[in-house]
Image 1 (cartoon, rainbow, N blue to C red):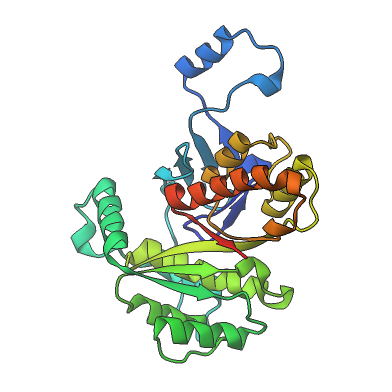
Image 2: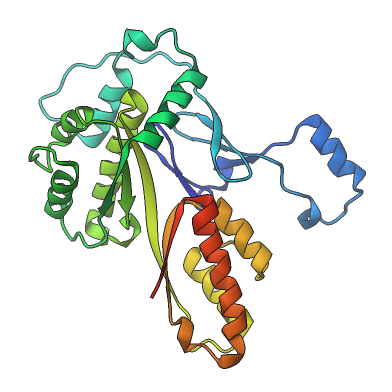
Length: 299
């Protein structure tokens, strides 16, 4: 199970919509598969790349084996002009951004140049972490954004005000933490705020946005290794094919969306499990150090 935010604002999930993820092989790769003379479908190796298609805007995203976007393709279309409105919804703001003319200075710049510039900016810009997990109201979200981004006050009912403020920010990376933990009454509002951030990222490039879900795994009372792996699978949302071993854990962690993972109760397992728990902890720490997209907290 994985999630990815499309540039159009649509949240893509291969668990809620299996049609999003495409299995793509070249002719040469498929012939190599056929040469293996496999019968069982589950033995067919995964393709070396993953391709996702947004059902709304039909963008195609190509991921490498480390779950990084290497290419994306945009469907050409004609956008009709709409009349200005007195009040703007989140969708209105995103539509306005997408319809704005790209600055002339980028007209002659290739897609690779833009990606390189964006990458360089990410390395030099500061990272601003915004932990929304404790927010219980829209007002809390607004105040947190104002404080962390140092932007003027804005009315939570007027997302166009947020839009104007975000366009003025200096280059920075914004990390939204714990959106998966907000109460249901504001979850859609937080999603809409992230949509605005993503769209400003795409249109202006002055910010980059990362979403980091917060997960907690409490090992207290675990007696058997199988029990530990089942707990990891459940809390991190791993698929049924999870192999319940160290190699499988590493493989899925390096492909997973960014997460803050809180590991609790490591000292509360049976004595027989301690050597295995240490190996599992090493895998989590390795994922944090080498992948760079996870944060591991040992409590």
